[in-house]
Each structure stands twice: as C-alpha cells, then as structure tokens.
Length: 160
Ligand SMILES: [Zn+2]
Image (cartoon, rainbow, N blue to C red; front, side, top):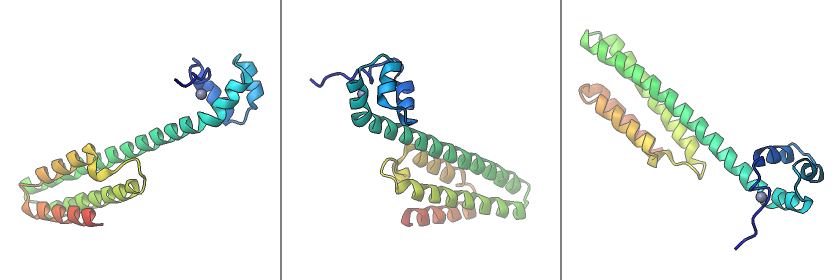
C-alpha cells in the first residue's frame, strides 16, 4: 500500500496548494503548516500537478455548462416567440425566430466543436446535448418549415 501523503490528508490542503502555486518555498510552507519539508517537497512534485489539472478541468467544465445554459435560454426564447408569432399569423416574426433558433444551433455546434477538441468532454454524447437536441426537435414538430430547417442545421453540425 502506498504511503499516505500528510499534505494531501491535511485539513488545509487547499491553502497549502495555493501557497505552493504562488511560489512560496516549500521550506517556509512546511514551517507554516507544521509539516515535514520532505513531505511538502514530495507533495509539490508528485501530487500538486494532478490537483491543478483537476481544478482546471472542473473550471472548464463549469464554463462550458454555463455557455450551454445561456444558449439553451436563448433557444427557449426563440421558440416561444416562434410559437406566438405562428398563433397570430405573424410570419415575418416567425421567420425571424426560426433564423434566431438556427443561429443558436450553430452556436451550439461551434461550442460542440470547441469542446470536441478537448479529450474530457464530448458534447455529441453528453446527456445535456442529447436532451437539448430532443427538446428542440420535439418542440418544432408542429412547425414543419422550422422543423426541417433545424434538422438540416443539426445534420450539418453532426457532419462538421
Ligand atoms: Zn500529496
């Protein structure tokens, strides 16, 4: 069994990591948190890089989720406008809403492309994307022209 790391197990590990990241010498960090110098040194060289990588991935995933949420909101608005416009026979506004909805899909496609370049997240298989896609396609079923346009846009996203 590997030896436990007294720094990883430390209740103030985040502060220790922060101090090490900010460039504090491991000797002074060891003193400050009452740890052995060798433990801090080993932690810095063997464990800290993995912690940093993990934190960065979590941050990027959060950022991607945030973007997805925003586009999802835009899309909900566009579809609501489309519905109202069709009810009142306002085809001009309906067309504008369709084009807006298509723009949102293109945005999603770009977002998917951006995320695809990273090994961590594949939007094409992410449950949120599949759910969103199903919601969009389903919501447009009563509006055949919009439905066709969106399906075309989705296909081009899939091929792209
Ligand atoms: Zn450690």
